[in-house]
Length: 405
Image (cartoon, rainbow, N blue to C red; front, side, top):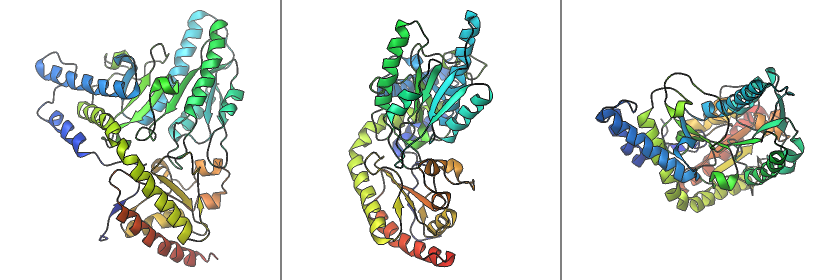
C-alpha cells in the first residue's frame, strides 16, 4: 500500500459528503418505513422523500413536484428519455390515426454510452438519428443542431458537459434554437421538439435552472455530487410526453413503479442542497486544475491537452501522452497512490479507444494514451504537487519501455 493516497477521479464518482451520510443514516434503520405505507412509519419516509424532491425542485427551478421523478441513476434516466419519448409520440400518432414519416432524433457524437447506445437501439426500430459532430476541442456548434432539424425531428439530446474531456456545450443557445423552431411549429399546429440534457457532470459547477437552459428533460445523478450511488432523477417538464418507464405500483406519479430508495433519495436531496454552498470552492478547484495542466505541459515533453481550455469544467484535465499505453499509466499511478482514469469509468474494461477523443479527430493510438485527472472539493495543493512530481517519472519510464523517442 503506497504511503500517499490521492483521489483524482471525481468524474467517475465522488465520496459521500459527511453531511449527506448523516442525513441518510436514520432511514436505514430507525426510520425504515415504506413511503407508500399509510401508517406513521410510512408517512415519516414519505415526508423525507417529499423534502428531497423539494430540494431538487429548488435547485432546478422546476415548477412542481410532479416534474421530478426519482430513478436508479443517470443510465436509467437517459435511456428512459430516448425510448420513453419515442414510445409516447408513437402512441399519440397511432391514436390519432394519422400516417407518420420516420421520427427523427438529434444527439452528438460524444454523448455518454447510455445515450449513444439507446439512440442506436432506436435506429434499429426505424427511428432516424443524427449524430452531430464536434470540433477538435470537443465542442458542438449550435448551428449544426439548427441545420440538423427536420420536420420529423421530435427530440434533441445533448449533454451539458462531457464526462471525459470536460467540455461545456452551448445548451442555452441550443435551447433558444429549439424554442424558435417550436414557435413556428405551434403556429402550424405541428408537434414540438423536446429537448433533453444530461447534466450529470455539470451539476456541481454550472447553472442547471431548467428555464434558463430551456430544456424539457434533465438528468441528474447523486454519486457525481457527493451523494450515494444507485439513485438519480429525471426532470420532466409539465406537458412533456414520456411513456411509463417501469410498470407496477403508483410510485412516481404512475411513471416509475417500485419501492422508493428512501435513504438514497434523502441523500440525493441533501447533496443537491449542498451544491450552492460548495460553489465557493470552484475558484480554488480551478486554480489547482490550472496548476496541474500548466505543470504537466511544462514538465513532460510531447504531451497534448484534450478538449477546450476555455469552455471546460473547472475540475477536469485530460491529456494524451504518445508512446504510453493508457492502462499501464493508470496502474502505475495507482501503485503510487494516485487514482485516475483513461476516460469514462463505464469504458474502463473496453479495449476500444475513447469514442470522445476519436470524435475530436484524435488518432486511435493517441487516444489510447490518454489520462483523465478530475479534482474534487477536498483536493489540496499538496495533492497536485505530488501528482506533478510523480507523473513525469512514470511517463519517462513507460516511454523507455515502449521504445518511444
